[in-house]
Length: 358
Image (tube, rainbow, N blue to C red; front, side, top):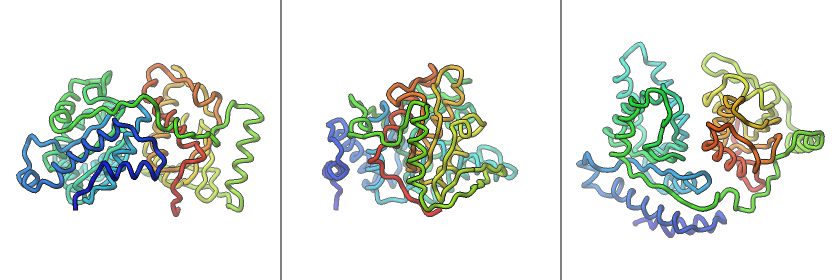
């Protein structure tokens, strides 16, 4: 029986108490066509035409519902599928290369990595696609060329259109083959909505405390006592590729950090992933004002919130400024809008976080 994507989406929005938007409904219909062409047309799939669009690249401003809609689509598709944050996907690739680097050259490793993907999945959803370092930039062209040649379908969300990816990056000319591949092999669609839906769901920020003063300190400590009642304090030691990272305040899945512990050190997506996997609830205290001087710490904070959001952990924070007025360095203004939008949701009393067995 054929799936009526529009009806399913309207029902989904009603259940979730989300406001329906005509641009989102149009996108859902567009995704339905992509689904029919790639998963329901046997003739097209069997002969795998070179010009068929195996990718769906969805971009737009923060908070317009990109992840929500592709999650909806992903959950409808009855195929071998895998959903993960783009950072996690690249970490998996680099881990694979590291483990097998003595056996093969780089091109063979890409082929073996993609063939392993192909054996497990026919659809991959990569959330928050962004290219910020030269190592990833140099490898993505060959990697995605192989992914598409193996007829793996890829759906992607990003805040940036394909042609603007890695725009100011080093040696960008060597990144251009990836841009060409993505434009040739993907449907590119921009989702435009006037308002940030995360800010318009009557979210009352129950877990965002500011400014940094004695009253805020009292509030966060009171909140912490409530959520950790009858929980045992321990030190959780995480082993990350031979390095130990200590969560010094760990209460059976609730982790408490000072901002400096997470963002002043040389930590990255891999470290934050391990922390989020072990934490149902994360408290981050003393978030500063961001500017051009502490932009490195801000970049780590952006990555941290992306990982926490993707792993569906809840957050409580204390900060120097209100969420609406949280400042940014000039170079990170655009990605930081996404961070602020996600903090609105993560700190809301209505946010339904995942309770994992740890």
